[in-house]
Image (cartoon, rainbow over all chains, first blue to last red; front, top):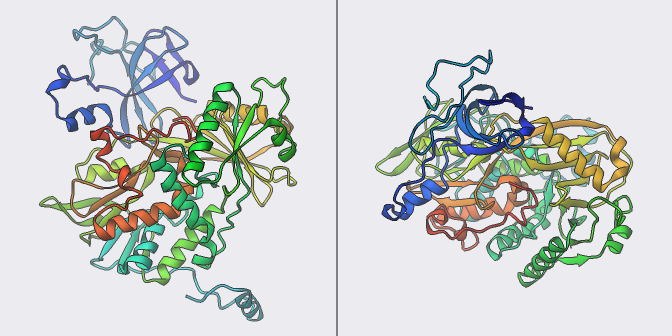
Amino acid sequence: MLLIDCPWCGSRAETEFSYGGEAGIVRPADPDALSDAEWADYLFNRTNPRGAHRELWNHAQGCRRWFGVERDTVTYRIARSFTLPDAAGAADGGVERDFETGDPTDAEPGDRR
Amino acid sequence: MKRYSALSLVRNALDYNRSWQTAWRSPEPKKSYDAIIVGGGGHGLATAYYLARDHGIRNVAVLEKGWIGGGNTGRNTTIVRSNYLWTEAALLYEKSMQLWEGLSQELNFNVMFSQRGVYNLGHSLQDMRDIERRVNANRLNGIDAEVVSTADLKRAIPSLNTSPDARYPILGASLQRRAGVARHDAVAWGFARAADALGVDIIEQCEVTGIDVRGGKAVGVETTRGPIASDRIGVVVAGHASALARMADLRLPIESHPLQAFVSEPIRPVLDTVVMSGAVHGYISQSDKGELVIGAGIDAYNGYGQRGSFPVIEHTLQAIIELFPAFSRVRMLRLWGGIVDVCPDACPIVSKTPVDGLYFNCGWGTGGFKSTPGSGWVFARTMAHDEPHELNAPFSLERFTTGALIDEHGAAAVAH
C-alpha cells in the first residue's frame, strides 16, 4: 500500500486516489500543425522510466484535486508531492510538503523541478 | 541432444540417473552472431528456436540478464486461449493455439498443455451481449467458441456460485473448449533445450546495457559480458521494453505495471477448468499439484518492482470468493508480481523499428504467456525476412501513427 501525500489533505492511503499516468505531458497548442508522428508521440508514447517518475494522482475520495508525485518505479518510494500550475502557469495555492516530515517545503507552489 | 522417452527413463534409472545431459549448454558469448535475441523468456527462446528450425539461422545468441524461467515466463497464471474479438488478434492467438497443440511432441519436452476449457463469465445483460458477439466473431474466424447457460455452468463447475441471489449473478458464459493451461516453467525449459540442440547459444547472467546503432543501422549490443556484434537484433524483454528502446533513442507507447498472482495451499481436485470473470475481475484454475492459481488486474501505477499493493490482492480475493464462496477458508501460500508492458490498445507490438536490423516484440501486457509459441514464430519470420508475416503485420509500431489500433480491452479479460 502506498501512502500518498495530498498537498491539501496530507498523507492518505493509496485506495483514496486514482492514478493519472506520466506528469508534464502538455497538450500541443495547435494540433493541426503537427505531423501524424508528433501527434502519436503526444497521444501514446510514454517515458516509462525505471527509477524516478513524475506522475499525476487524483485524490478521488478526498478533495478530488489533481497533483503530482515523484515516485521511484523500482522501490516505489515516494520522494515528494507537488501542485500543478494552472493554464496560465500560476500556482493554485496548494502547499508543497516534504513527504518525510510532512512539513511544507520552501519550494514555489507549482514548481516542477 | 539425447531425446527423452520412456526408454530413456528406464536406461537412466539403471544407471542411477548419473547420465542425464544438462538441458542446455552454458557457452561463453562469441564476438558476433547472425542474430541476437535480447531476453531469454518464453517469447525470446521461441523466437530463437523458430529462427533455427524454420529459417536456417542457427548462429544465434539469446541474452538473458537473469536466468531462464526467472521472469514473466515463470510468473504468470499459465492460461492459454485464443478467443479474442478482433480478427487480427484472434488469428495471431489462434496461430499460437495451433502450435501449443503439438508443442510437447515438437520440443520433446512435456509442457503439460491441458485443454481443459476456459469459461469467461457474464454477469449482466450487456456482458452476455458482448459474449455472444465475441463467440460469433470467434466462430467466423474458425475458432471454437460457444455460449453456455447458467444451468450448464452449474453442471460443469459445481463449486461455482450460480445462485440468482449472488451479488453479481452469473447469467452465462463463453466457453472455449480447446483453451486451457500449460506448465510455464516447462515451456521455457523446453524451448531452451530445443533451441540449444539446434545450435543456439543461451547466455544467462548477461545483461544488455547498450545497443550500438551506426548510420541508422543496428550493429551490436553492449553487455555486462562485453560487446557482441550482430546486424539483426530482436528485443523481447516484456516489462523492460521502454528501457531497451531508450538505448536506441526510440520511444514506445508502453507503460510497465506490476501484475500480481498467487497460489493457495494444495487442496483436493475441485476445479477442472479455468474460470475468468471480467466483471467481478478475477481468474482461477487449479494446478496439477492442487494449488488454486489466482490472478486479476494490474496495479494502476507504473512499476518495475515485481510486487504490487495490498488493495489489489484484497480485490482479487474478493472476486474469487464472490465466484467460489467455498474457497473462503483456503489459505494463500505464495504471491508474486511480474512486470507487464501494457499498450494503449491492449495488443502487442511485433514489429520492425525505424532502426534497420532492430526489431521489437513487446506490449503483450497481461496476455503474453498464451502467445509464447506464436509470438516466437511470427517474430522469427519478421527477423529472418526483414518483413512481418501477414499475421503480425497489423501489430506494427506504425499503427499508433496511422491510427489502426486493435482495441482488445474487452477480450483481454483483465482491466488495463
